[in-house]
Length: 297
Ligand code: GDP
Picture 1 (cartoon, protein in one colour):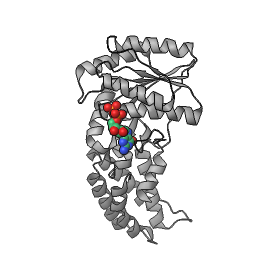
Picture 2 (cartoon, protein in one colour; picture 1 turned 135 degrees about the horizontal axis):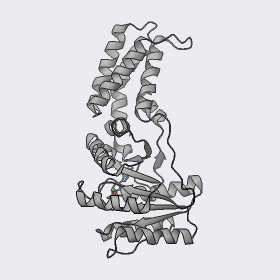
Picture 3 (cartoon, helix red, strand yellow; picture 1 turned 90 degrees about the vertical axis):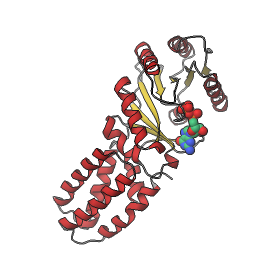
Picture 4 (tube, helix red, strand yellow; picture 1 turned 45 degrees about the horizontal axis):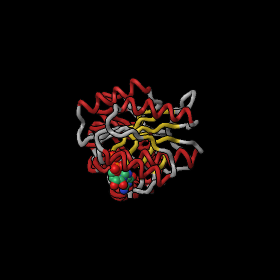
């Protein structure tokens, strides 16, 4: 379960301070020390933890009294608000093209869950917003990736555009755009090539697709279970591509939460969706506040 380990780790600390009718500076100090250790154990970025603790401390020590809450509860409320802010604060929406189709480029390393998430996102757009997406297979290096997207398209009963591997990704996308316009489809979701590691050729290709297609969104798909590696991957992709948002996959198996709690602060890009399982309906809009509640109960 998402954040389970971190939530368990923080339970004691929360219980200890929750019932307090009076919270001293010493109590805040002890509490923040434990929260700091828990976050570091959860693999949250060191600098992110430092800034977070500083903010909580400042607010908790200088907090004005709210009549409905005990001082202990107020301190917990501050921690929860700051955790939520750390993950982006408000839920963030998808940018939409003035004239359809809206183009979304999906990027990320191989194995992160990019292709599955492309299918899941298309499914969500259709189910939740009643939109008609086109899936585009733009990975010309791995025929298996094209097959995978086509299989997903069949499962979802959704159109897939593919043109084999003897054609440039830019050309594939141009053809797909023409098809989407012709068939009045609202979204074009481009499943780009992934590699095992970040490499210059791949980035050049993605930059080329970006400058040709001018997507409305570039979603970086990262595996939440890889913790700080996911954060580093996000930083690199963002530096080169200026992505518009992050999709965290495999949050269902991530008990620690290091990536979820660091990525927004490090990249300044919002987490838009979270993968919560392998099934095609297991993609959720990412709500920072609800995620913070999962951690603090
Ligand atoms: P790609 O190489 O980035 O396109 O990755 P795939 O889409 O092929 O996914 C790699 C593996 O991760 C597959 O076995 C997926 O079923 C699995 N996967 C993707 N997203 C999730 C998720 O949110 N939760 C879980 N548990 N598994 C996921």
